[in-house]
Length: 189
Length: 299
Image (cartoon, rainbow over all chains, first blue to last red; front, side, top):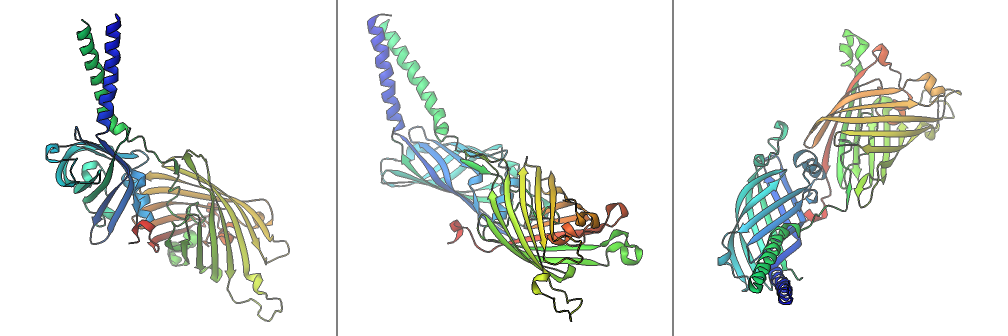
């Protein structure tokens, strides 16, 4: 290896670091996003929220990911929370829920200009050990350098292998309305 | 050659980093396990069968429990195998915070009122901090409110109606299915029927549950009286039953040789013998009500 090759490699390494730091400046993340879900039947209203949601967004690729600790969901009724973890979501076996997706209409969103943009995010939602493809509509609001992502969508409980016993079938609806609200801040390396 | 090498190097390295970063977006979120995980739902409710379990009603939760024992199964067809008779206890328990709960109750057996306190001392946990066991302290006072047998007697003191139970509840949830509990018990009775009877009685309880399904568990409980006059006169209580959980209710159905349901009486005054068929069929039904909502749901 002659001297100039060695130099070139050094330059290459240096450049790739530059590229990386440029790329990471295009990443946004949070550790305290909010996800809540809601189910209502004539017999019972079930509501829970998790305010420790981890999420990251790469505005150059459109990659958008979430990681949620199931035990982080808080319920109005302590017993519901216990049953949610013990019997339904089995959080000992499946402690996390994740979403790996991509913003499909990335070109419609100008992350450098304040404003509200409609977005569609598609990807794999993992709940209770079962992965399903989902496509979710929501909004990105760019304000003061932060990205506020909001969405509301519905999932079917049975899609994720969560069994509802007959005795409580009147208390738990078949579908859950899920609300996502995260404030993503620019990641500084 | 140098240029080619340069191009190759740039390509390889940036591709490698690029790929690393695509994966990293999820990895960047980290493995966000809770720092310490506390064991929960060691038992389904606040009773193993007749005796206390390590569970408290949750903070701000009111638990209403109806306990019922029918008569002895061996009491014959005339008594419809015990189903004609009944002993009941009605109780309320309330979780003052995450650690302490209080309770009151009334039993038809000897027209007894009870008041209790249960406090968590240690909680089983794993993670950054580890603790293999949960330990709680349970104390109660019971008041026998029956008319005096000899109302004319001058020594009918109010304090003579009282008895006290103190227990350490030592439990471990071994797995999702198996939980066991050891219950050292000290009972003091202010008044006892004979000079030979013990005022202070020690016993050890053994309890456990095994979950058959998510909502069905088998529970068993045995209280061993330490040698003494009480152990000679009375019988150790043994109970076995199932817990069925349906949303807000827990139904506990059981067979036991103890007629009463409060600690002093079923631990130290059980007379029924399993071998003779002195078995009572009974149940506890508990229902919880959320009185105080958690902070996050206040508005």
